[in-house]
Length: 319
Image 1 (cartoon, rainbow, N blue to C red):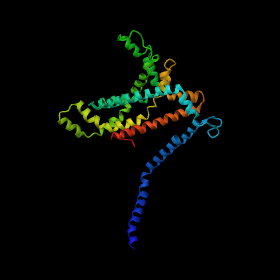
Image 2: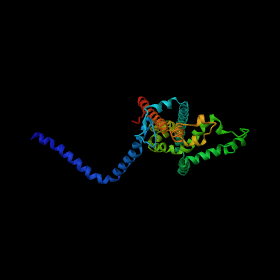
Image 3: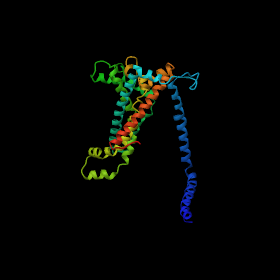
Image 4: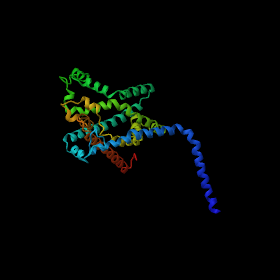
């Protein structure tokens, strides 16, 4: 009898939980359906296609399919790692990715800090709107703008010559030392306003009493920015940095492919262009897949390592 009475409250709690779920589920039907659709979308478009990774271990023939093609093990990976062109393209990808990562973080944070100091709401909204616009432009359009601006008769060369800084037009797309920086500054121009959104959102969550206390202590605008705003953004900066470290090998494709040429190909080609040339143009789908797997594996390793370093340093971590 004692055991029965002691168990009955637990049974009652279980019944009440199930009743609560049945009562609340209809109210959350939209969220449940939306979540289910997102899960299905992820499985269909992100996980099922991973079956295609099997082709990296085959001499894949489209006519025979994945399960009919000859298995060759790691032969394509061996060819990949013995190919000097691949290592050259990997160097270019890492260089452009790191430059873009550093400059994009600095400019986005700096832009958010400066925009936060604009007192006129009308001016702030106008600047925000203008800064977002390049993000919505197609990369093809952006590439055309950059190409026209830096051409021999473009606006940049016209300006440099009118200021007497140069005597003749600079062939920007024929000098290897310029290409990585052209790509970096193009990405900055296109994405700085958009990347600053999350920092501006984080700034709005800072306790206003901190600024009031700083005003009482006689702190200026720069001091408040340096000692209050920037430290408050530190967790957001670290989390975004960890995420974006994994995108170092996603240095881009359209800019490099369209702006590149035979003169600067040794510094313009990336892993994505390598995959295009082998996987599509030469119909070696297995080698292209192997290069894609390598890129994904390195990205995962970079995210895990950067997260672990942040954890060891006692900072914010992603997982």
